[in-house]
Image (cartoon, rainbow, N blue to C red; front, side, top):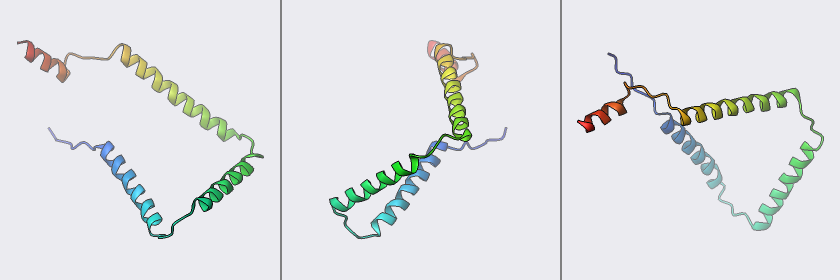
Length: 106
């Protein structure tokens, strides 16, 4: 039997996210400038105006409907399987938990 080392995707995701945050903070910290409340408020107001003006004339495209449809299908399939396995789990007697329970009984 070959022993295959399993990849821990939670650790990889966490470390990648942590690295991205540190990269972002490194760029922010290297600025060495303090921003006043008035400057930050003016910047946020200009961002809001830009976003509103860019989306005011936008109409939904076919790709928008496609993306929403695909994500709705993914959500519904996930919901179906989560409810299915919550109500009736697919337990088999060869699972390790049954072996442990049988050892405790004897």
